[in-house]
Image 1 (cartoon, rainbow, N blue to C red):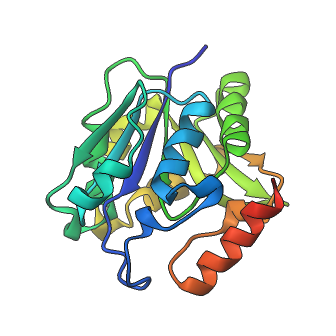
Image 2: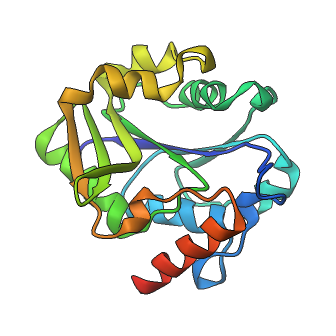
Length: 202
């Protein structure tokens, strides 16, 4: 079985939402960050690194204290998402086979995330990404062969998108089975839509 790690990015200011997105109520009476950590763990990702920044002291207690879950705080989170990714990567142990990078505002179920991990284990692609009806969504999963490129990302060069675009022809689309694989939560309207889609899968 491959060692497939996960970075959960929960450091941003949630400016457009106007309140902490990691602490938004989600399914099963959990906060968004709690739900997502548990989904990643249930899907077999380990280790899991949760990157906190804005209001870290409020978000930290909501992160489940599961085995294999590590919290790291990124003091320079205002410098952009790419810096949070690199900061989180530095906390991963050597020897991993792949890593997925998931934003806390892109909630995905354990079923979907397991499909992504298992697709990597079966096919061993350089990149894999959840998709719906042929349209790319999130998250992306990166083979460890791409770690040098991931460590070199920057906001000036569009962060992870630069790596994704560079190897687009080598990606594997993994059908998620729901349009929620395409969603991000930046506004209350998007929050409501995502919550309805997620609830329909129960």
